[in-house]
Length: 319
Image (cartoon, rainbow, N blue to C red):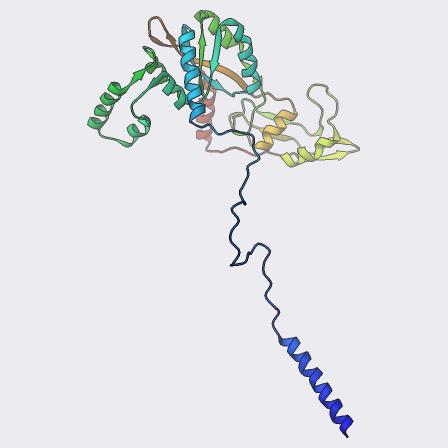
């Protein structure tokens, strides 16, 4: 009898322990990123940037101003030019070619170049002009600017008015005719980048795709990248084959990254690197003469007008 009671107590104790463990909520675990409330924040935890690029601080801007003004003192003529479809490798080759001809290119932030040529009393002249609408206030502001304006050399204030957009300065002692020949010879065709406008329409017929220069079939390793760019392709016995006739781009439309990649793959150079002269300044007379600049953007303007008439944005690859 005693044995049965003890056995009953033992089983009841086991049952109560099991039910307690079964319905007891699990303990809360601390997350790995949570620190203890009593633990102070370490002052040694700092974000260290691994980039090698230096910020363009005040010292860098002062260096650009000093170099620009030194070029003004050293050379007899200064030109303002606009760069279209700028390519660093071509501009670098042009820089090296003019070093032995007493010439120098100077490019940088247009605001810094304006300060180097003609510093004004107010640092944000253009912003203030746009905010004020009354004619009387604009005239008073112009008078104050003319009084505060400090030209480094006579006539440089008029030259600095052309420093808008993707422009630069070219200092030289060469005659004007040689400068024109130099800039006209610098033009070169290159591959278009995403966002630029197509100069010509480009289509691909259905069938095996070949290399534009050698005429041999494309490497089979290019097939995944062509398909990712939007071409309906497949591998037919190791040969990259286009399934249907495809329009890669149309004239005047903005290129997508995929279209720009396809044009590069098939050797279509639809961008033209050029340097367009805008104005010339002579040190002796201090006069500024407009060289040109009205013809360079005709193709882009026409393409923009065509797009506005059609009402279409950048097109995708059409199959």
